[in-house]
Image (cartoon, rainbow, N blue to C red; front, side, top):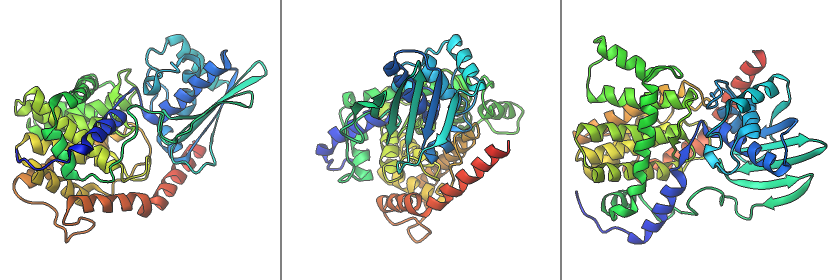
Amino acid sequence: MTQSHPKIGLWPGFVKAARKEVVPALGCTEPISLALAAAIAVRELGRAPERIEARVSANLMKNGMGVTVPGTGAVGLRIAAAVGALGGDPDGKLEVLKGLSGEAVAAGKRMVAERRVALAIADVPKILYSEARVFAGGEQARVCIADAHANVVLIERNGETVFRAGSPSAGEEGGDYDFADASARDIYDFATQAPLEKLDFIHEAATLNEALSREGMRGEYGLHIGATLERQMRAGLLSDGLLTRILTRTAAASDARMGGATLPAMSNSGSGNQGIAATMPVVVVAGHVHASREQLTRALMLSHLMAVYIHARLPKLSALCAVTTASMGAAAGMALLLGGGYKAAGMAISSMIGDVAGMICDGASNSCAMKVSTSAAAAYKAVLMALDGACVSGDEGIVERGVDASIANLGRLATQGMAQTDVQILQIMMRKREAA
């Protein structure tokens, strides 16, 4: 690989970023955030709740309305709040529902059926916000989470403040980090040149997300896209090639995750689907080229950290489907494994920005696996183009001549250009919900 002069002083921050943003998560992280708030509130209350009042930001409502909550077979934020309150682990963070009992699930479903779980949109400026207020025996407790899915900012009991966060982003793993002085090249240099012991923790992403993929290939979850594509391959309607294997195994992991499988995903930037998108294409290509553990580890770090770097230019939740940006990380990781180097990685990312930048996020649901597979295909296509010396040029659309400038334009599109799109998506979804 080509050596450059790495900015080693940035590397501790890169490790912090990866450890903070690449963490295990059980279930879609938006309803899980509310489940965590409810679990912590019940611990503060000290008894099982008689009723729950939940409020969430508009974006969190959008992403939590249509997704299956792990272990419940039920959909939505109300059941997430109920089972989080009745059986969640308040210290479990994004794995709050790990080990959820059948009794807690049954009690949670009764609570929802008896209309003892109220849900509303919170009038707050935060894009990511969840709040659970629990009541029992004339007492109440309230927990608020903001800015990040496990970042508790307020705990109250009977109206008195028990805890108030001093930092708006101190609640998740790994500490603070800043990409202000970093570039895509710096990310690449870190992943390819840093001592392996600084990177080895990222290998768990392959372990967790491969397990989800195997579970999804059983064909029992969501839209079972992965299993369907494999059947069509056996029927001769798809070729048994690397692209097909990337699509099937990546989509299968998302099928399982969105369909309520009780296995954790390794998430990226607060999203299990982003973690899957940044992991599985790299894992499949690594198997194809018979990569060593070190080669896979470095490619996974490049993929995940590049995905975090790109997503840092976006709102935490927005109208832009962020599996596209996670797949841009995967494109860089695949390019590395296929011998393309930094130039090919940058070209592939630029081509993806010119290809799938407009994909919308219309809430978390089983159909997310479709977007995951589409983005994975776009990533592999962009890598093949880059290996052949072709990419979307800086004269076309929002793509610039440098990859960092292209990424900045993508961030502007998400933060400014798609704000009204986000409003319209939520209005459409809420109208459907009211009409149901």
